[in-house]
Length: 161
Ligand SMILES: [Zn+2]
Image 1 (tube, rainbow, N blue to C red):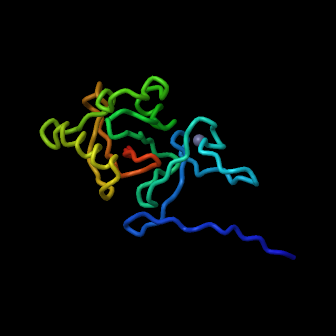
Image 2 (cartoon, helix red, strand yellow; image 1 turned 60 degrees about the vertical axis):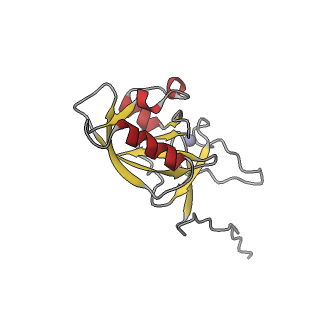
């Protein structure tokens, strides 16, 4: 009996951590593909693009997240984030991230710092960082957020917890 073993290079980021793939909408890892070339569109929901991030950053299945590019535009909103924030991905994409999330603390870090951090991370540098944000329209709600690089292309992954 022949044993088939998938030969796949283990990918690591610049910090030497494993890189994992996940869907930008439903957060599931990509479906195993047969002989067909791997598609960048998620085989589970058919909506999200497959993204990669380091294993310590990538969202778990139930964690809401947003993907933000270097111009601070929203690139993707996960299904869980749509529910949590009451927004629809198709309406959120290409809007400014500050239309949806702002720093939870009015004093520090300032909005400029949050946005500067997102730009820096989206440019492809930096370790995952944590901050606290809130929905723009709501003052009583705050979420811890992990922010780190994902891609391709280079973008910032903001995971709410
Ligand atoms: Zn998906």
